[in-house]
Image (cartoon, rainbow, N blue to C red; front, side, top):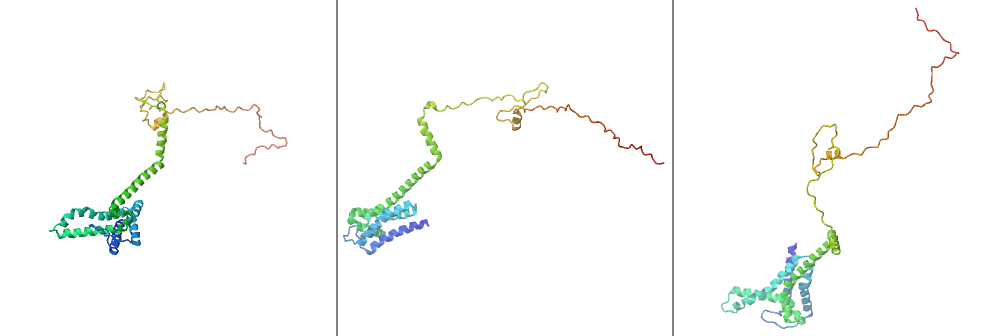
Length: 276
């Protein structure tokens, strides 16, 4: 699809130039200028074609990032420049008596291309002059490339600026840089010296040996390589505050209960004798 843009733009420019060649007589030729009058429609179409190939199409392609449109227009500009590059070197060969047939055909084709490229700009000679109007086809290639490159450079720096403004890290760096310019060098923090040598840790309960315990060697580890289990045991625990509670005291007033006394109304029966 992108190559279609290239083909469409290139062929559209050639068809527009051939439209002027087919329906209007040539004004600019390689050898001479044939004076004639220009109508209003020819002037309008000439200005429209000039604005299209020199301003509208290059700006649109650069703004929309359509490189293939710019490439098609640039190739058309190269085609317009071919007669100016090749025909001056073929002038001596074409003027010789023993000229080659291929040289004659090549010169004829290049002169036809020159007339086709200059035909749309013929009516602009009334306002710009013959020399300026004749040089306009040679401006198509540099204008299309310069406009596209200028748009891309501007877009690149604009995106970089916007990304820098939206990046919080750059804002922090900027504020830190501004703050450092106002602070005196005496107030700057000095780097802390590094501690060299071994680190000796304080003795813990695990390392302190009671009088009654046997002499057992306890492995020592560096401060950075102490296992997790030993570090938990080495942490001294705080003594819990225990409230001493005594046994409950007996009450002094105790009611002494004896055996129940028999009542007078009860008839005492002798024990039952076993049957004979």
